[in-house]
Length: 193
Image (cartoon, rainbow, N blue to C red; front, side, top):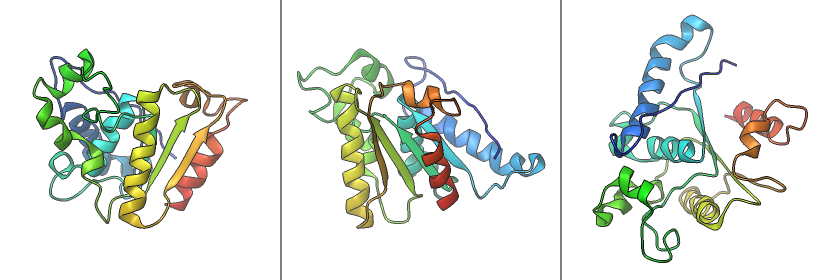
């Protein structure tokens, strides 16, 4: 495998869909260049954690983000992302967080269109969704909501894991370490797609 690490532009200077567009730019670069490094441009698996998972999900599911030709990834690994900032469950007090206002804008009526949950359609790339035991509720329930939306669309359960004894960042940080509890599962998912 070839690993490519990327980042994305940040709010408030860069608003939705800049993070997902940056994911798309990397996919386009890989499509054009990965073969010269021994990779297969048709087997790109995107992986994101937290906000990164949100950007990967938006790129994977939202046509206005990935464009008319569809997403260029063969699969997506989504670790503890936020997929529905617009939902009342995410903002139980009715007040959007400053970071979401900075990225999605002040007009919260437009937020549902920016949620991957509202764009899952047949033919999407396979997804691996995981959440941790100690993710805070506003970060945990979106993974379950995404799981339900994908299952409803596909009429089949996607890859899904609840990682016990983990906090929000620990699974991603332990990959390929002596205490890696998710890496082998991710490899199995990647091989399956």
